[in-house]
Structures are given as structure tokens and as C-alpha cells.
Image (cartoon, rainbow, N blue to C red):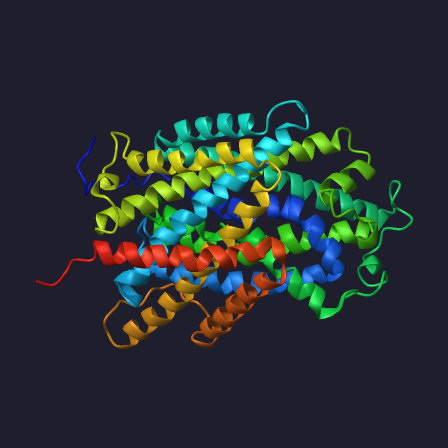
Length: 452
């Protein structure tokens, strides 16, 4: 075991960073969550994704500016400590750890559910346990292994979406196949209008939309292990708006143009429905594989990011010192051990309450996600003030629209948080939040050095 204070190795290549950034924006929320969202908002869902995507663009540009100022593994937790104070850094680091632990639990649950497509008699907890063990083992190897896994996980998702968009365009433009006669972009506004449920329908889907975007900030955690962060990180950050346009707005627009939104089922993935109707053999099985891949990717990212965040917290004296050690492969193994141990709770929950567990854990993750994005915007605003005062060096990569964009994004995130109260499924997050932040306050008070 190496000594605390050893550095992480910079072995993530530019292609790893690019695909990690893409993979962070494509998850189970798009492949599955979009079914319920389309049912609740109709084509107006595109507006919700556009609003959320605009906020994500500014969040990622702000993060990109901070990353080029100081590319470190602790990323936004370190920026929060530097520009908002030690308590903000402590809360951000632990909240991000908690967020990814819970996201990983949700994704392990999804794996357990969708493996049963082929093995319906298999207990739901067993595939979740097998996936956790496999991903835990791979994360203990060199960081290059994580990068390769994420590269191929992301590539599968990208190929699937590109195939759907290409096939859909052929149907719409050349009137091919069973949908050829009715497929048209006019379907986006002729079945009850573009906003069949009014602006309220759009607002009520923002929670689902922002959950679908969760994980996009993961490239910030890779900063300490990127080979050429000054080039790779801005490039990955700059591509975010194009990825949102193609993979979210593009895919959903094609789906609702090929099949009118009111003919899609809220309980069936629109990707499965469209691929089946286009005559793709084994469409349900293909999308099931993609969903399992997306869930495995997210869990893999969870183990990666939680281990690095505990390592960063420990180096700053905000977590047990044992987490600051690296193994011989320069991997923060102690943090990965601890995170995987907590994730084992998902096996217990899938055994005890298999029907409720997915809704519970996905709702709780929203609080950590929204806090992280909010603190990025506040840290960026304070960083700009520090640059103006001569206390920090200006970064060559800058977020446009500051400081107005900072306040606009923060107002948007607060609105999304308030909207959680309207849905019983997401309201549980508002019950958990004060308990979690209260525990963090107690923990910080105990860890903070007392004045002599």
C-alpha cells in the first residue's frame, strides 16, 4: 500500500474522456424514463429537455473553466472548499459520494430487473450482486481499465441511438416500412398540439429530465487522471450541447415523428416500440442489452467516482485517513472497498422490497445531483470574483454569460427542487435531504479542528 499523499496516475486518454463525457449524458433515464415523460408531456417533452440541456450547458462550461484553472480529482468539492469555504467543500464531497452510491444502487436494481427478461424465475438480487462483484473487481485494477470499460459501454449506447435516428429518418423522408404512410415531423404538433398538457406538463417532467442528465459532471472527477487535461477536458465540455441535441432532442423528436406520441405506451421503452415496429428482429432483447449496458456503465462510474471522492476528502482531512492511500496500481482501493460495501445494501433491498427499491433510490439521488450542479455555479461565480481581485489566475476556457447565467441556472435548479414536492414518487427526496444535511453538519462539527 502506498503512503497517503501519493498521486493518481494520469492514464486516461483523450478518447476515454470523450466517451466518458458522452456516456455521462446517456443513461437509463433516456431509454426507459422517456416513456413516462412522453406520456406526461407529449412533444412538449422536447422543450423540457431543451430547458434542462441549456442549464447543463452552462453548468458544464462553468465546470470546464474551473477544471482548466485547476485540474484535480476532487474537482467541484475542492473548488467549493476554495471558493465557498471548508464546510461547502465537505458537504459537496460527501453529498457527491452519497449521490453516486445511491445511483449505483438504482442501476444495480435495474440490472436485476432486466436480466429477468431472459430468466424470469431468477431472484432480482442475484444479478445485482454478480454485477457489483464484477465491476468492483475491475475498478481495483488500473484506471486505464475503467477508461476502456466506459469507452465500450458508451459506444454501445451511441451506436443504438444513431441507428434509431438513421432508421427513423429513412422512414420519415422516404416513407419506407409500416410507418411510412403516417410518419412525419408534423406528428410533433398535430396530435393535440405541441403542448397537449400545457406548460404544466413540461414542468412536471423536469424532474425526470434532470435525472436523465445526472452524471454529466463525471468528467470533473476524471481531471486528476487525464493525460492532457488542458486539451481533453475543454474538448469534452464543449461537445455537451451537440450531444444533447443529437442524443436527447434528436432521438426523441425522431421517435415522436415516426410514431405519434399518444400511441406510445408509458410502460414500454419508446426505443423498443419503434425498433419492433421497424421490423428489427429481437428489438426488445437488443434494447434490454443496451439498458443493462447503460446501468453497468453508471454503476462502474459510481465505483470510480466514489473512490476518488473519498480519496480527495481524506487528503483534506474530511474523511478517515485510510482513504487517502493508493494501492500499487495507484488506485484509491480503500475508498472503492467502502463504497462497494455500502452498495451491497441494494442486494438486501432487492431481496426485501424488490418492487419499491428502484423508485426510492432514484428519487433520493436528485438531491445530491442538484446540490452538486448548484455548487459548481456558485463556485464559478466566486472564482470569477477571485480572478477580478487578483487572488486566482484566469483560465483560458471561459463560461459565457457570467454572472447572469450563474443566477439563472441557480434559479432553475431551485425550481426543479420545488417541483419534487408535486410528485409522491420524488417527494421522498425532500424528506431525506434535511436528514442528510443534518448528519453532514454533525459530522463536520466533529471533524473540524477545535480552537485551543
